[in-house]
Image (cartoon, rainbow, N blue to C red; front, side):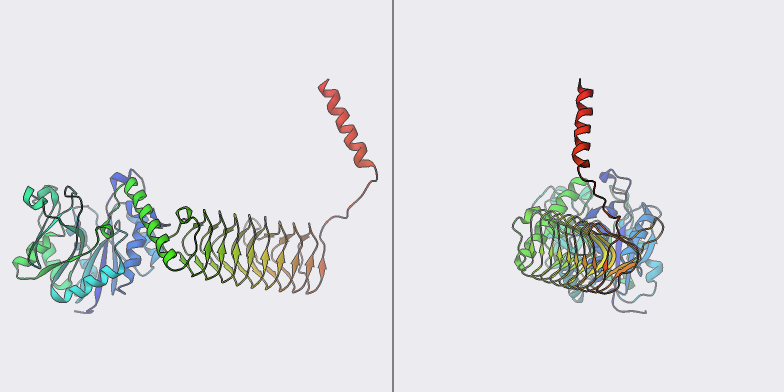
Amino acid sequence: MDETGIAVVILAAGAGTRMNSDRPKVLHELAGAPLLHHAMRTAGTLAPDHLIVVTGTGAEEVERAARAFDPQVELVRQEEQLGTAHAVLQAQRILAGYGGDVLVLYGDTPFVSAETLGRMVERRAAAEIVVLGFETAHPDARYGRLVTEGDRLVRVVEWKDADATTRAIPLCNSGLLLAEAAFLFDLLREVGNANAAGEYYLPDIVGLGVSRGLRATVLRCDEAETLGINSREELRAAESAFQTRARALLLEDGVSMPAPETVILAFDTVIGRDAVVEPHVVFGPGVTVESGARIRAFSHLEGCHVSRGAVVGPFARLRPGAELHEDVRVGNFVEIKSARVGQGAKVNHLSYVGDAEIGERANLGAGTVTCNYDGVSKHRTVIGEGAFIGSDTMLVAPVSVGAGAVTGSGSVITEDVPPGALALGRARQVTKPGLGRRLMERLRAARGSRAR
């Protein structure tokens, strides 16, 4: 026996045929992240000795997604989908000799909370097998039923195999199960498939364990936590449930949202107290907004950090790597990516700032563009403290503008600008007195002759 902690096995092998999709079910997104990532994130709160994902349908794609979330994840494949007991059994080669407990989760069940998993771990002190159950408000719901005697769990009966009396039991099986590894795999090898579905059911280990004298018990949770996603409609309902709950939590935490029902949040959105989020803002994954910031209407944020007192938008887009320091101002129709914008700096409307370092109190006029891509590689632009970039300036990277320097409006800057200097990079204006009027008269006359 090597460790004595906990290992988590996440089942993610199913095809999800009701999704009617070429994509594996666990990779469909909820709140900006694959369903699988929700399960992995919650499992991670237990700091498990092993985090194992069992793949099957679309195995390579699912494995890539799992590694993207946690490069240390351990992966096994269920080549044939023969049931949940068979799926967990695939993890034995990793957990051979493991002396801790094994918690089984599902990659399509995103709402089980970290608190509930913690309670399951605590309950293990009183029983060798812990099953997560819930009371259903729908007597005809086709969940497996938990048969109990007092506080003991006796067996789990799948809906297809249950008689009318068993189906009338309101206590249902969520599928989540916690047991000691030392006997879990022994019990799994004893599970048969003499049932209506012809599958090897994981919950059958309860009856087998009880017959050996082991104690099994039920930990109850709210039915909403056990929601599994099997269809597009269930995914839509889950998204709605997530957004409603996440918005309510932010409001409770002191975030102002005048029209919260229009704000879309990601699974990991963090917003500080007294921040203001105006209507129709969309948060992708990886966003932190500090206290007192304001995100104005119709903005889209992803993979970015907005510091205290900053104002973003309306109609702004912050892409991954955007780092806004305190009191930054980002105007409407501005896009920023992979750029640090220093304290008090302003990036005014219709500008694009990518792969850049913007100094404190710098002012980027309307239509400023950092030309960061040469068709092959990206290059960086550095703008110093207090620099003033005139409207419609094109900064052709790699290039730097020194502290306190100024660029003339409409300039194309291709060389470094020293601190305090003025840089102009445009053709000299030529003015022809009277020619504008004569030109317009000629054009109008030509149009009139064509009309005749």
